Image (cartoon, rainbow over all chains, first blue to last red; front, side, top):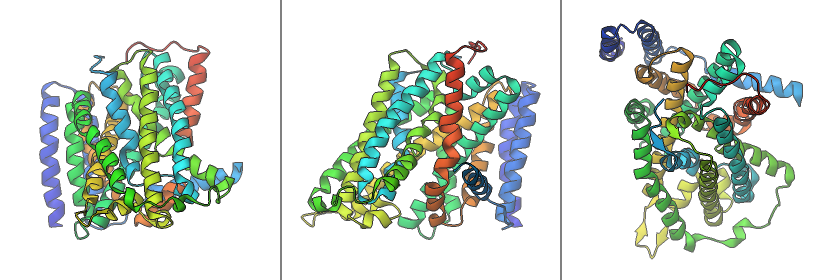
Length: 73
Length: 361
C-alpha cells in the first residue's frame, strides 16, 4: 500500500505540472482528457503494484484472429 | 502545420524504425537456413509498401493515416478506424518495450525488474516526443549511423566463424514454410512502416522523396539481410532456436583470442533501434489521439500514454516464449487490416476521388 501512496504522489506531481499551463490557458478540453488519461494510468499502475491480475489484451486479440482465420481459411 | 524537417532527415527515422527491434529479433527464422532469403525478398516487398504509403500520403496533401481516415471516411467511421490505428500504434509500442525489457533481463540485468528498465527507456522516449519531431530527427541522425557501423563491424568480425555449409541444403524447407516466414517478415518490420505516416505531416514531402524512402527501405532491408545471413553462417542450426540470434552470433566473436566480448556493441545497436521505434510509436499515439479528440497539441498526452504503454508491456505476455509465439503465429494476421486492408481501401478511395481532403493536416 505504501508503494501506491508513492505512486499517487508522483502521478499527482506530474498531473499538476501538466495541468497548470492548461488551466492558465483555460484549455478545458485538453484538461479533461489529461485528467482522464492520468486517472487511467494511475489506476492501471496501482493495480499492477498491488498484484491484482489484469487480463492481457493479447488473449482477446488471439481469440478474434483465430475465429476470423477459422471462418475465412 | 509547419513543415519542421526535411525528408533527408526523416530517412534516418525511417531506417531506425525499420531496423529497430528487428536487428536482434531477426524475422524469418521459421524458414530455417533460408531466413536470409526471406529477409531479402521481404525487403523488396517492403520497398513497394513504403512507396505505397508515401504515395497515399502525397495523394492526400502529405497527411498521415489518421487524417486520411477522418477526411476520407467521414467523422464517425473515419474516427472509429483512426482509433483502431491509435490502438495498433499503442500496442506496437508496448511490444517494442517488452522486446527490449525481455532482452535486457535475459542477457544483461537478470535481477533488475522489467518495469524499472521499461521506465528508464520510457523516460527517454517521453523526452524525445515532448520536444517534437525535430529533436527525434536529430537524435536519429546522430545515433543511427553508429548502428550501421556496428552491424558492418560485427559482420566483419564474424567472418572467421562463418561456415558456408550452414546455408546448405538450399531450399530444404519447402515453399509453405518459406511463404509463411515471408508473410511474417513482411508484417514485421516492413509493413509496420504505416506508423511512419504520422511523421509525414511534419516533413517537407516532395514527389521525388518517394524514391528516397524506397531507397532507405532497400538499405534497411540490406542491413537486415546481412545480419540474418551472418547469423546463419556463423551459428548454423542454433540460430533457429535462439531467442536473440544476432546477439548469440555476436557472443561467438573471437579474433586471435584478443577481440572478444563485443556483443555489447549489438546491445547498444538494439537499444538505439528500439528507442527510435518506440519513440515513433509513442509520437503516433499522441498525435493520433490529439487529432481524434480535436486537441490543440499532443504534448499533454505524452506522459500518461507513455505510462499506460509501459503498463501494457508488462501485462501483455507471461514470458518471452509466449511473446515470440504470439509474434509469429498471431501478429501477422492481426496486423493485416492496419498494414494492408485499410491503407488499400484508402488508396482506392483517394485514387478515384470521393470527398476532397482538407488541406489542414
